[in-house]
Length: 270
Ligand code: HPA
Image (cartoon, rainbow, N blue to C red; front, side):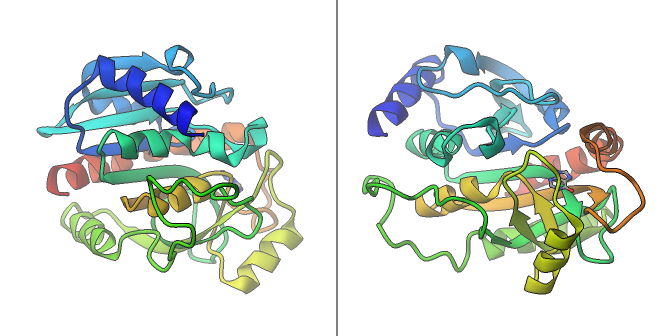
């Protein structure tokens, strides 16, 4: 694993040997956020040694490095999912690489289904915690001591101070920001209504197919992480609509401006 991480790290560091403040992972249909970056470098995943490739529609497959409000950011336009066939260690490789690049702050974004009654398409949610029950542990196997300890505390996967700041910014920008617990499902099929009811009973508010592994690894690396979800649909069985990836992308497009505004202000003030 160290070899893979180092290869990717060295390739990116050679192209961009300057400090980077914040890494952002852009979820389904949220790729256009990268248009807000004053671009200094773009690096296609296929050029980065040992990096996986993004195979999902709505995920572009490149790193974009540049400035937003004086801050240097690196954005993953397109992420890797378990359902694409990758191991969790490959899905979370970019997080290790970001940590090795000295990046301390991470924004994870995703599109998800709303489980809690008040969560509707278009809502933006600050992830307060997560349920990784169905997610194979990305920390399985030999511990990467260089990044963190074998048995890492997970009481604050998403940094509480940063969540507070995000809420303050949302309030100032008059953006309605809710809180919620994100639950991982392997996908690629959407959940069954019974699965959604089971997770609802366990305290899950949001259903999605990403984020959780990346957040665990970021916590292991000691990164300051925020998770921001865009609800693109009511979760399975909670509306009469048949779920589709197209609906996810269409709703994400509609809510994009709001999300871009929130994240830009966060970057400015974080
Ligand atoms: N379930 C899982 N992942 C998702 C959903 C959903 O309802 N919507 C967008 N991503």
